[in-house]
Image 1 (tube, rainbow, N blue to C red):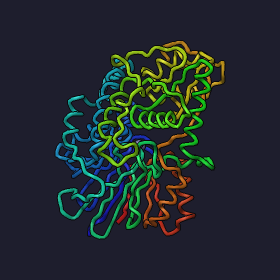
Image 2: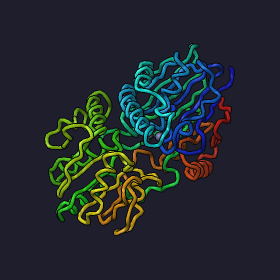
Image 3: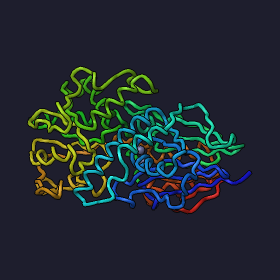
Image 4: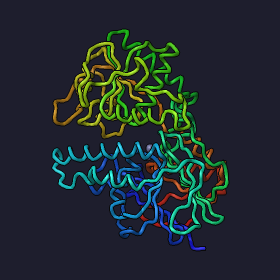
Length: 455
Ligand SMILES: [Zn+2]
Ligand SMILES: [Zn+2]
């Protein structure tokens, strides 16, 4: 049989524009097509340079996050016949995120003077989404023009709809984890992955350079968050939790709801807005259509849980005794969490509770890195703001801790393990640890653009 090859189309060894090409002989399958969250224009895209018009047979979209989906409309433009297989929930979430991405690029066109923006239009998102075909986990389906290649999805935890993809041709099996979490979050259940029979494992490494604190538990971390919120509210302050609109928002709101029910937190509504309302509506739509915790629970319809603005983009009224659960998760410029922060962090009674990732270049990272009383630049178009509020950090990651990723490699003992979706130090820690613990596997850190023979 002809060979199987793997090629990273990312521009670097990093978490950026994730995209991979799997070639099973003449059958070429694209796995994810992301956009780099920190780069602009063509630099933010995977390197699709070597892909000819109409030369791809199919694509798989693992989940909706833009670092996996953000360039899908662009590659689909040059591959008009290519079906894109994904889960039903991912299709709904990615469609909404891609339309929002068009809006963000359109506003950057003016502000950054980028004439190449938007890189795709609302119409193109619509056209791309029509080529997406939903597949259910655990049910093999043929992929590509022949009948020799089969794909099966497996639930990956991480966010609603996230899947890993197993490819089988003859006796050879290749499994791509996508972004994965093995443990239950508050809504999304932990991954339901193959426990054996994998020859080649392509595994994410997001948390490869940070050990999990000993004794960590999600619930204990939730109780710590509740205590911090209670302390702030009791002293007359308000709390802001900057949240990514999809996933983090719904997980955190449901955790806060659980904490209220457990009487760790007083009953009060959480203020959300904008894109978060839309993404929460999609989570609610899937409330009883997927394997999840709090089955049937709809956040937007839960009495007293949420306060939503009268119209999109409306600034919530500030003042003491409130909890704001606002996007973006990194207080990016021109978002609601940034706008509120500019009028929030000067107040010594207030608390910013950080529950997600903060890129070092983001406004949120500058808040985290500031000393009390220091001026912080939140938006270059406005004066810096003195930070006198409290800032506390909590860990509710949607990615598997590195120790569990290594355990999974050890369980599968694949012939080849390919490390993706990690910055250099993360990938290198994983490579060293896997080499030591699972000597029977060959560990590969794929260099961008260089094909690796895997079968
Ligand atoms: Zn992700
Ligand atoms: Zn990712």
